[in-house]
Image (cartoon, rainbow over all chains, first blue to last red; front, side):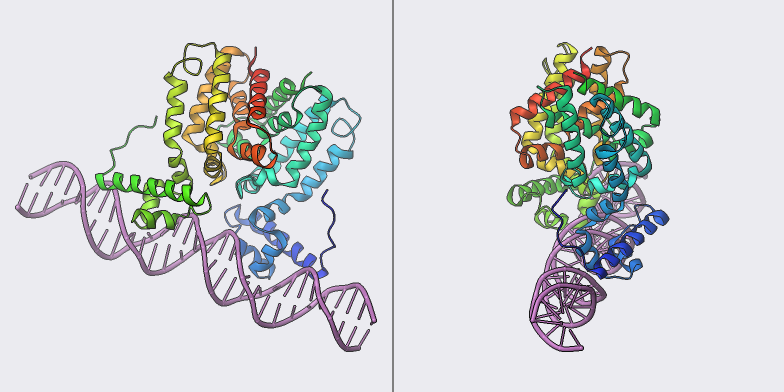
Length: 193
Length: 193
DNA sequence: CTTGTAAGTGGAAAAAATTCCACTTAGTAT
DNA sequence: ATACTAAGTGGAATTTTTTCCACTTACAAG
């Protein structure tokens, strides 16, 4: 998506993997609490400076932690089999997108919530959001050619915020099915011609 | 809204006001950057411990900074004149709510964004969100009695996230009018019977 | 092989958030 | 007035994030 800069040096790539593994281990062992940059660096056997060079900041690290799932997800809607991928009618693809998104939220909501709120606007600045947004814009454009596609794509994505999902499921006790039904209802309302 | 605990001691109330004034001054002078707890405490002539005792954490402080506006806003939709307050038909009230919300976002988006992302789920845990949500639930219930009101209220509120507003207006260059039109379109789609 | 150099590194230092607690004080009860 | 106590206070200490830079290293070109 971004122009590929020259590849990382071998030692840098090695450190990136070690840091990612350390972060995943710490998260598995102590949840999002124990996930301090110093602890991650220590476990990976590097200095904290390296964490910053590889990932920019805590947002970048948490982002990288969910990135393999994100990559699969993007492949799914960009070139996977229908109805998520190309081939199905746009409204079906939107529903499939919503379902796949909720799958991810169910699997990684807490970590995604940290990634999204690591800094104000972290979610909207991310490449993942841009990719999701672009995809939804193109689908909505087919269904409602005269509407403001960019705005509607945002309106479809915001209810899929990880923090909201955690709140609905944990704080408010809504079932997964109820959330899914709600999402589909909104997709239908917003995108149907 | 919460059961009133015994009132603050006079000196504590004085410090609360001093801290709030200091925070507002620093924000006016240096934006959200210069808004460190130490600087706030120093300008108010207190120790940092007092900031924590009065406001809990940074989220609490930023929240308090936007609270007088929030209070006016809640009075507006709870007991103000129609169409925002009681008296107008529910769909009109929803549109008025959306407009009033955008007014606030235009005035304080940056600060609201800090408050909302001060911690994961800060937005959804806040009393303000609960009040907005309850209000929307009651309006949506009148329009779409068979729908999932709680979910739809969330779906109406998420596109009004401060971080998204900043992104749309500043990063993406959307005009205020365009955002307003988008919001009204979504309200219509989601809430119309 | 050398060598040049851009990329990478660790960890000390700075900045900021948060906790903690010995001391002070406002308000109340006697 | 006096004494009591729950609330409040300041700031040092702790924790974590973030910046910075002198030193090291991978690797490409000769």
